Length: 238
Image (tube, rainbow, N blue to C red; front, side, top):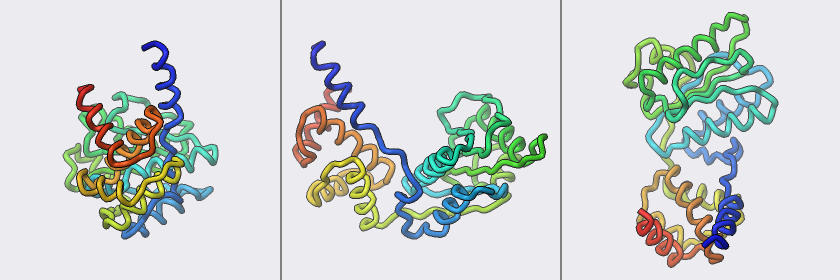
C-alpha cells in the first residue's frame, strides 16, 4: 500500500490541468465577447469600464476569466480574484491592477459585501488610479439575487451574454483540451461521453481531467472500457 501511494501521487502531479488561455477559447457564437475580453486583457492601458459576462453553465465564463487572469499575470499585473469559494471580507489590495469576480450569482451576503467593496475601490480608487473590473455570473445583472448597489454597478459597463456551443464546437473543444494534455481521445470515446454525460463544457473538461489521471494511474489508453472502469471505481469509493 505504501509503495503504490507515491506512484499515484506522481501520476496526479503529471496530470495537472493546463491553465486556460485566451487563444484556447473556442468562441463560436461568442466571438464578440471573446475579442472584447482579449483586447481588454492584452492591452497595456486597460479601460476602466467594467465588463460583465453572463450565460448558462458551460458557456465558457470561467474559462474567459481564468484566461484573462493568466494573460494579466503574464504581463506582470497584480490581480484580485473573487469566486464563491473565496474567504469572505477579503480586503481590497491597492497594488492590484485589475479585479476579477467569478460566479457572482453564488455570492452570499458576505461575498456580496466584499464584491461591492472591491468594485468601489477599483473604479473610484482613493489613489486616483482606476482599476479594470471583469465579472461573470449565470444571470444578467438585473436578475441577480444580490444587493441592489452591486447589481447596478455590474450593469454599468459592457454586458455580454454567452451562448452554449453546438456539438461540433464541443467536440473541437474536447479535442483541443486532450491535445493540450498530450492524450489521444478517439471519436468513439468522444461519442460515448457526449451520449451519456452532460454537454456542459466545464463538466466535460473535468471529466477529461479525471480520465487523464485514471489513465496515468492504470497505464492504459483512454478507451470506452477505461471510462467505465473509472466510473465503477468512483462509485466504489463513495
